[in-house]
Every structure is written in C-alpha cells, then in structure tokens.
Image 1: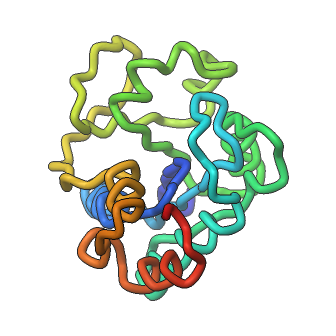
Image 2: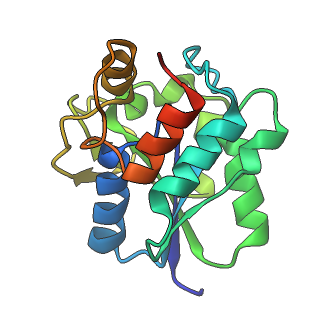
Length: 185
C-alpha cells in the first residue's frame, strides 16, 4: 500500500481552528500521508446546515490552503443526503492507500445509528477522537486523545450573529469570506 489516508467528515459549518488543530494532530500522531476533509452535503443526523454545501466546501478549502497533507474533497456534493458509507466506498475503490476515518466521540457513541454501520469495520479503520464527551461505545475504535481547542461551529455562528469578531477562531481567509458573504448574521 502507498501509505495511510484518513477521511475526516463533518458539516464544517463553518470550518474553524479546532477542526484544523484536530486534522493536523491526527496527521502527525498517526503518520498519515494525508487527511482528506469531507464536508457533508446534508448529514442525516444534523439539520442546522443553513449555509449551502458549496459555500462550506469553499470555506474548508480556504482554511487549508497552503497546508501540506490536508486536502478537501467535494465528493458529497453530488448527493442529497450524506451517508458517509458512500464516501468510504468511493475512496476504497479509487485510492490504494490504507483507509481510516476519524469521528468524534460524540458520533462514536451514536455510531450504531449510522446507515450500514457494521459494514464500516470491514472497509476502514475508525478513529474515535476524544472531544468533550467520554467514549461509552464498545465497538473496535482506535481511540485517540487530542486536547481540543475550546471552539465550536455553533459558538462561531452565535458570535457572528451577535456581531462579534471570529478572526482568532478560524483562519483569516475564512473569516474574510464569511464577512464578505454575510453568513451567520
């Protein structure tokens, strides 16, 4: 195999420094060739993505521009509902690297509610990244403890809605794009 890659999915609504910190830490800790960020079109477990997929994809790309080994895939933009299994199957077919995926402990604790959840274990190694929630699920996850930054997308959306500055919570290109487009106000 030609190394290891890790899929890191999320709504990225918006992508922030906490996501970037996690991606970079995972890349270093697990010696990944690359981390592939996969913004979801419309995740079945979420209904708070009021900013269109194409705009969230653009913000993720702006956030990682110039950072080696962190890439962004728009694969989920062609689907109406984002089942990550379809994304895993796509990468399994099109890439030769050993495939991993990273999820937070919040999603790991709900993993049995995912579409075709049992099938993941035959296709990909799953990393459960400790966030603010303890992992209670007993499935065979690789547990990784990354000290999270105290940032969330919901915090950023609230801050923007209140007229606050977000430049210390996301890369400047993303903050400028959000201001220009008038998102989350």
